Length: 360
Image (spheres, rainbow, N blue to C red):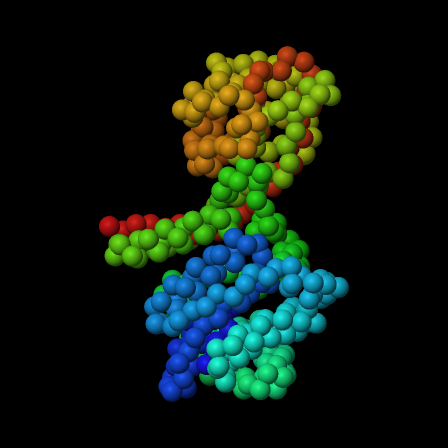
């Protein structure tokens, strides 16, 4: 039986239940999910599905990441709610490719782990699966493993085996609507031009879960813990001196009362120069290099290839006098001696992140 897989939380439980109910079927997983955005989230879910299938002894096939094809299929349905018309098209799209894969493998049966997702409609899924089964001469199996406390068992199993738990279906349209309803920043879609890995970004999670796999292969013990913290994202930053744009690098946790300020240098304390408004500070690139142990030749080089986020936080800690200081700190090649303007559009917000602790 070919089993379409959407994520490890759903598949880990579903595959074990299938094995119990269909003991004579050889199960093969098929990860085909071009609806998952961004690509880093796709890679993270695939990584965890591979781990789950390895734990269960299930063969896994990865389908094509055909994002363009999926976007064309759902065009015009971007504003549809979850379980609406967009989801139906999405199921049809993924199930059709799964059915074709089953035919190419000479399989007679197929199913999908989407059936265990509490956010999906069983009726909607069965209708899509049955229609394609009739089209390709297959049988679509739609067992209801949610009933009789199945969802609770699934969640407990995911917790015990430390599976990655995403908090949105994967679709960019569902994500943006969900974050709007939660009045939260859709930071899953943020990637800085520097490619610096931001705290609690999908790239940070991917990095952590890859490290987790390495630890497991080495037989080392670990624990994944959750921590509540103040997160930050820089949306845009700009420095103008006498209306001329000057290259500037904004250190992490740079914020303004609003998004715009203007003023001039008022005083300096050692190598840190203070503007006369909004608690803004400046340091030179030379001083930055001395603090960071780096050798950047110009600001543009720093902007597009900065040190790690944690390394820059260490630099910030050497400049400020309080752990709670979130004033803007700009790195420039020369300290401006004329009137200047700053745009700093940033967001700070309460967030929760996972951290990997090595126990031995």
